[in-house]
Image 1 (cartoon, rainbow, N blue to C red):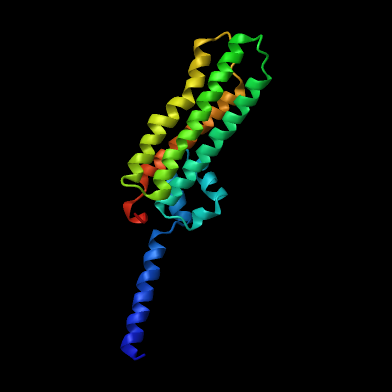
Image 2: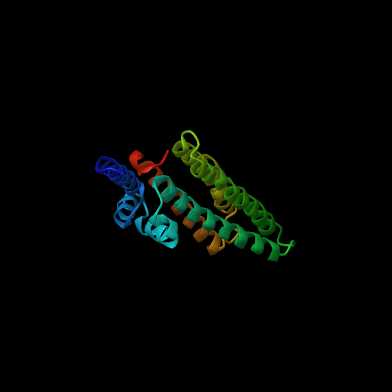
Length: 189
């Protein structure tokens, strides 16, 4: 190979490697992006738990935060379902409320799938599709349980349901903050 060919190959490889460096996240990128969310510490903790965040592009970072919120939703569902199973049927109001809550939490958890598919596949308008799924599908189902307990103040709201619902809502807020603030140049599509 002559020197011009070698120079052209070197330039091509340098340009290609630079392009991949530009779209990868790093600690400064994560901190900067997380500070644009309502819960910067929660955001950074979520991203640091997943080693893939170090090599993720902007869409990948958003996907990781959605998965963190989805995991929290699964925990709230499991707790509520187990509590419902342990509640005596003779306590009709609590039994029925927990039954409805567990169903609503399950639907909320399953509704995360639309957001993760949009982000995994990079569907047309993936950002808008993920944001819409979180706000119009996940959040309403997630918060219906708290609404049920508010309508029945005689029923004690289990702390784990309150705290768990708030954790998922915070995770959704982080995901929405990430989705709104990802620079377009940091996404592969």
